[in-house]
Image (cartoon, rainbow, N blue to C red; front, side):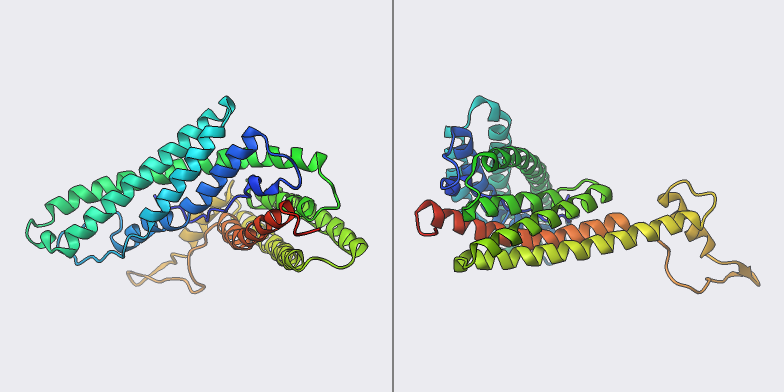
Length: 339
């Protein structure tokens, strides 16, 4: 129910007018991006806080405590952004409109039910009815959280596909001497990495990132002095590049480990089979009627998926910083402040 994968923020195209004039689709995407960036903060944290405090199973005799609901006021901002997005959205974005509205509706129901559960617990009513109402509210809350996460994931994918298409189109016609051009070019390269769907594509896209990084370095050397805000952005991008290279090394080691795991177990066709075989070997032999655990540690598990998720989550932390700085640069350049 709760995904361990972090969600990334999106570039708001409305502030990139210095690169490319906004179409109705870009305007809609800008509004939906703004709303998405808000909804993955306090509203998503509300779901996480609830699951962290109560979990999937409600126990009537347990003393629960919920934090204050800070999401409600933010949902007003999300509603405003999504409404603006729907007003500009062309017919081709009908699915995005529907999914965004569904995510918002689930978030609002989740917020309302959260308040009901908190009131129920804080008032002591849970001690009077043996948890009957609490169980009912808990079931509703889990249903709302599931709907929220599902629609948020769908919206994330829809915006991502549209974002890539619009960015590529903007870069094709953009002035390569603007700061905004390099913001979008570097962010697109970084985005490809955190959206990689396999270890192979993950590594390939990091190689492509290195190419983009060299191009940026050449442009900076040619331009000379940089605006302070872009200099900060560039330093953050350097940090992302360094982290991506470290991530590639970590994934390479994980792939080698999993490959060795299979080769060490001759009957294993997959890593999962090898894990099972290794587990059986490490159970040890019986001596004198008792089982002796073989020294050498814990049962093996496939490393590559876990390592990739960990590395991507760390990269998303830096990527979100890039987006925040990029949005600032877009606003400054659109208003003629950065030249």
